[in-house]
Image 1: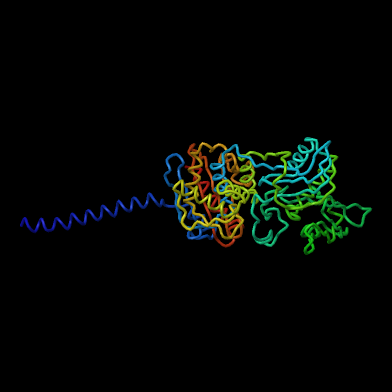
Image 2: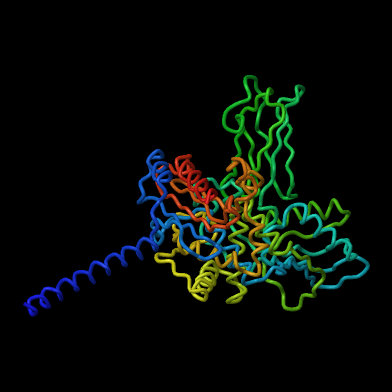
Length: 484
C-alpha cells in the first residue's frame, strides 16, 4: 500500500507546485500591470475611447512603484508633451548656467564712431530674441561708440544648418508663429503684430506694424465697411505675393464697428526680418547705415566688437514648457546637436544627442521616433513608461527645482491656467500638456493630497481626442491620483 501512496503523492506535489508557481506569476504580473481604477474605466467608456487607444503610466516618485500601467510600451504620438524630454535633456546636458551668444564683428576701419566696412551679425541660436531684447542688443552695440556703418549689414546664420521644408508644411498655415522654422538669428519669432483701426474720416483702416522691419513693403488695400464686427479676421485678408517675401498685401473689408483689431503674423525670411528690424532700431537710436543686407559666413579677418547673452537656460525652458513654444523647443534640440557634435547644428545630431542620453540612463522606448523635439510633428513617437522613467530621473535630479518650475501649474499659469480648479488641486499639479489633431496628453508631477508625489504620463491617440473627449479621461485620472 505504501508504494501506490508514494506514486500518488508525487503527481499531487507537482500539481501543488505548478499551482503555486502560477499564483506567484499572477501576483507578479499584477504588480507589473496594476488594475485600472473602476472610475477611470467608466470615464473611458463615457468618452467613447477604447483602452487600446490610451497609454497611461503612474508611479510613486518616492519608491518608483508603478501604480497604473496601461499600454506602457506602446509607441504613441506625444504632441507637445515631448517637450519635457527635450527640455530636461537640455538642462541635464548643458547645465543651468548655459546661455546663447549673439556676436557682432566688423571688417574695415572703425574711427570716431564711423565704420568703413561691414558689420557682421553672427547668430548663436538664441531661442528668445524678442523685440525688447533685440532693442537691448542694438542699444548695447550703440553704446560701444558705433554710429555710422558705411558698409553692409552681413548676417551669418550658419550655426544652424538650413531646415528642410517650409513654414506651412505641418498644417498649411505659414503665417502662424508656431510654424516658424529655427534660425540661428531668429528675432521675435519672425512675427509682427498688425493693428488695424477704423477712423470715420478715412476710407481705409490705419495699419500699425510692431515691430516694423524697415524693408517691409506694406500694401494697404483694405476698405472700411459697415455691418457687424465678425467673420474670419473681421473680414481682413493678408497675402504675400509669390517671390516677394518682404511684401504684405492687406485686403478685404474691415467693418467700422470693429474699431481696433490686432493679430500677429509670421512674415518674411529670418535674415530679412532680422535685418529690417535691426535697421529700424538702429535708425531710431540715431545711427545710420549706408549699405544693405548680405547673408554670408563670418570673414576670417573680422574683429569682434560686441557680445550679447541670452536669458539663462532655466528661464528658456520655463518659457518653452509654460507656453508650449515650438520653435524655442526646436532651438534646444539643435543646440544639443551642436554642443554634442559641433556646428552646424542639425536636427539629426540633436536627435542622436537625446538618444544617447536615454541610453546612458538605461531608458528603453520601443518604437521611439524623434523628429524636431517640439511635438509639432506627425512622426514623433514615445512610450509612456519611457517618459515616466525620464520624469522620475528629473524628479531626483540636482536640477529638479529648475525643471519642475518650468512646468505649467494647475489653475495658475501656462497651459494649465484654466484646468484642474477643484478644491485643493490649485498649484499642486505640474503637468505639460500636448494637443494636435487626434492626440491629447499630459506629462509631469502630481503632489497628491497625502503629500506623496506621483509621476503621471497619459497619451490618448484617438480620432477627435483634441476636441475634449480625452479631457474626460485625463480629469478622472488626475482626480484619482490626487486622492492617493
